[in-house]
Length: 305
Image 1: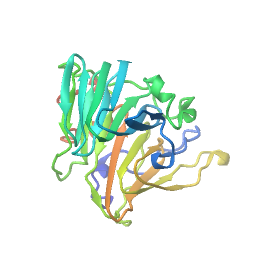
Image 2: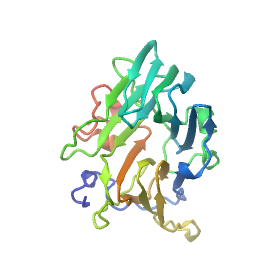
Image 3: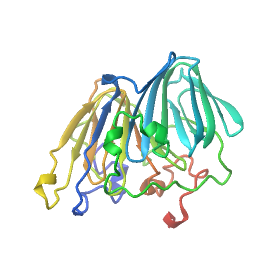
């Protein structure tokens, strides 16, 4: 996809970053789960976790019968079952639903249970408001202090019909002019990209940047090379070399604000990527038809045109 054809080229963050503010820039985070021991392990599940300032990504390899419980969960979290063969039973908010594979599900705050009924990969997304999980992440030490350029976390408005288990199929046909398959809730925006068969054309990349939020890119299939470049500040000691990091599956890359970045699939087979933002992105939310469940989760009133 050329930069001119990429729908992101219409957004305000598509060019070079704004002039440096004088604050140092944060490094990229590269958590290659396949190269590290799990952060949690039971007889039926192994779980790896990494974080950004706001998001926590937990990827589990789970057998049928594995159970994931949350007590007094402070906010909504997201369950992704990327494979059709995986399934689960979710109990939360006084209801229980059987969840098929190849779905994304939003789980209410409070007590909840996910029972895996068909084994496979189980992905959960939490915010750093879940301090118990933030402390377990592989890169917890890197976020003991807030990173610069990121505003304090603020959830988006509650759904008008109230919190409940909401599940959506990932089987959504591509549509010209729409970027990926995007869902949002009060805490997250998730963009599930269609499979990339073979390497991306290196002459058609899409470098861009974000001024005030991190991007968390989760590789669940194949391999990607993430390219990051930072602006210069007045202090040469704060300058950073470019990153060109190859990350297989599963892995989490956290791209900090201001860094110009683009990612390229490089595996000759099928490459699968999910982009994660916490809280939801304003620019994507304002693109007509991009957010597939926009009617259920309103934008903050101050962001509406």
